Length: 190
Image (cartoon, rainbow, N blue to C red; front, side, top):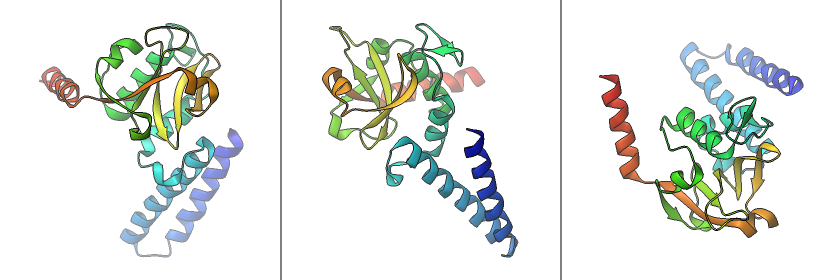
């Protein structure tokens, strides 16, 4: 991990140095664009998601920061987290939305979508050894999703036999919940 961080810092410093020879405003804009492009390329490669699918850099940075966090049923921190808490934390930090805590309750907040309609940031729900929803993750693109699994926070493929077998539905947060959540946040700030 340190090697990757050092490599990114080195690349950014090289980009910054080359940008200093350009006019100040153009250099700043170009350096920021170059850094974002570099970050998107790096994150899309390590996560196995097409560069064209990585429109939300904040989402990919969040996932990258949490990868490897151990799984703990009922956990809500970096010491251990479960699937719904990971999803709730992601929606809070990336999308500034507070969603419910359990995978079943989260499903009540979405408009179901099929696998082929999934978009980056949509939710994916599973019925693993259960008749009811028992697992949730966040879709990243290219058939891949981030979730807190028994092996910890990871990125998996919906095409993996295991996840394909237990996949229930995708879901997109209903506009009515987004509006309600945003209104609650406005009320809290007044």
